[in-house]
View (cartoon, rainbow, N blue to C red):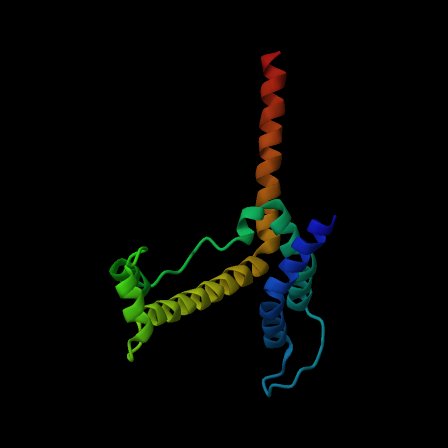
Length: 158
């Protein structure tokens, strides 16, 4: 039960910023003032955020993980140049080099790669939030079709 609450809570946290931005963009006046008045779009966004996205993540848990791991060309080049195993002289040279060492450059590039992965994950989950109800319908339709075909196959093979 604790794991289920943690998973649902992480789904809410993942989409919270996107939901707030989209809800404000739909609700605010052109002057920028926020006046809450419910429309069909607001109701759809709210229901997708509160119920649709967590339900979609329960139905398709593999969507919760980011399929795109960003690795920049600079990170690959530095990994290839330094390799996994460095000699003691290379480690010493990288530590005392007055210019940016390869290790520092590699850590900076990996930090940028991680930030790009987080940004891509934010966009993906924002799109999943907007498309959650149609995707849930497709998933349930596909699973219902499989069950129907399975039952028909059992009936006709008897």
